[in-house]
Image (cartoon, rainbow, N blue to C red; front, side, top):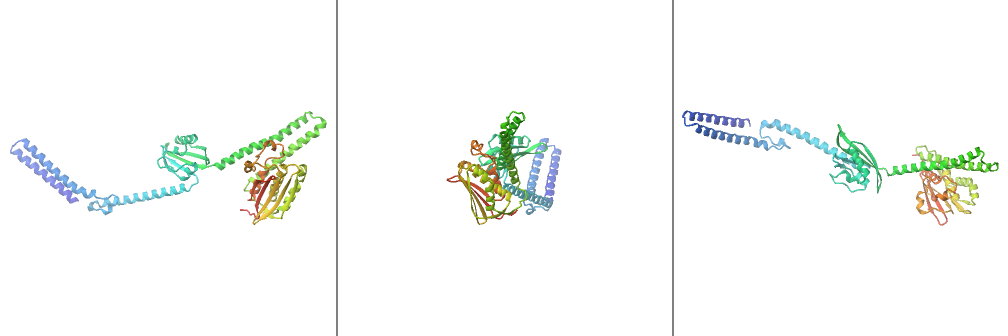
Length: 438
């Protein structure tokens, strides 16, 4: 290449010299300045044509170099350093592209395996990435690339949450969908106070919201149930303290105070029992418990309550021994039998049957009581749930009995269910015969 360049320069120089000599000769012969100018222009044009031709011959091999594979093209040895640098640069670019592709695939694999939804959008709210969980949680079809993030939900709370994030503020909101409650967390992605986009997380909080609702209802119900006997006790004691009760009525008023105090103590005991059952991290101390004799003991404790309502009890079945917490199992049986008495008809009866199938013990309590409407059966194990509030107020109880049964059975990894029968209600408890700490 050096030789061709030198030759091109040499030819151009020779032509220029010849042009100058001819111009000088013409000037000496005094044939006129016009002829000199014309000759000069012709010579310069000729020189330019020759230079252009030479340059094209030189550049053509260079233009034929493939930038992606420069090492396959070496038109001139003088270009070898440039070609080597291009080859190394291509190697670095290819490595960066491979790493970028691997990182993107890894990011996609991670986000697609998440149970929570994740969405990344640019400052114009255009979706850059959106995993499958986000669409599934919101119950929508998969979104195409380039769609607006507002396509995820058209609810006003969602739009406000996204707009706050676009304004640089971290925002949270819970929206209700046909598939449950969803928590939306939108955070701005900023560098040096410049918004580069937003990151949105979508989580299923249906169960958490249900538990929170139950907690609020429980707190409200406990407050009400505690307030009722305390108000009665305070009112009666205030009348006694101010001498507003005749002497012959003092015993009656004292009895009322005692009954309300008993109701209060029962409620507190039930709350304590539920609190204990809710503490799943409390170590389980199992022992051998024979269910038939335990049922016999519970029926005996409730004999006075049964006599007051003229309800008879019957125990049938066989001896079955399981490993469990005797106190909790006793509370389970006690609450089932107490309900069978309280909600029975006068002169009715209830039956406790102890049986077993392979690896499971079964406790069945059947009564001839008022029964429970089918639409309420699923909820009767909730705390303070009342099927008929007006009737329940006439029947002594805290409203926590069946909730204690459910938690006590769950404590032993068992199940409990209620079904209507032709005569009344049937409660069926199934418990594993062998229980071990896990």
